[in-house]
Length: 113
Length: 112
View 1: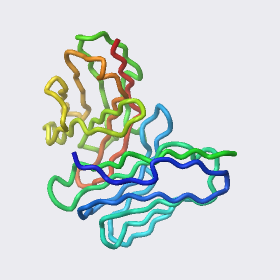
View 2: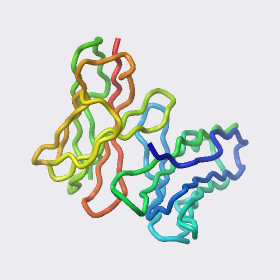
View 3: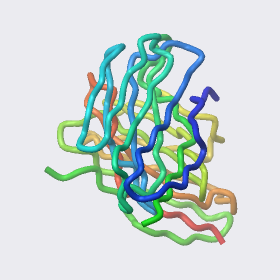
View 4: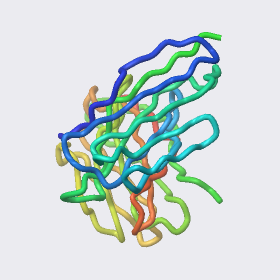
């Protein structure tokens, strides 16, 4: 099935560093969602984006809905050890059954204290 | 307000048996989604129920089925279990008119 291109696949950073990850699609999306999943738990919604160009922050997290509607990025500033986990992007395509989310394969983040 | 709740947390079955997983959505949410996540892999869409009807299903064999009850809770049934069905099964819910979904903690199914 269709999947989003999420990158990087994994990151290993030092505590305090900023992190950036992104997702791209070949088609237009009308919603972008970012989730974080801790090991053995369900994904938790971090940020939801509904309009092209929208820039939304949630604490140290900032995400943007790309102007082309084909991409989105998530930034984490001043990373801390509890940021460790897998970050997933997801979105609803503009066409077709817009209730079926398309998912990226995740970005695994490791933070060295 | 309670989030999405799933039961059981862990389930161990043998090959060929049937497994039933349960999900209660967030109060007021009418849509329920089921995902399979094998160890270390991404989320694979299984089923979507809305207002008691199956609205969409992913690329899974018919032995994966489910239903949604009048109170919007849902069951996922997996028949004739195979070893590769071992995974974390995640349930999520959403309001009828919003696209944002919220996940439960998941049910771990181990097939031996």
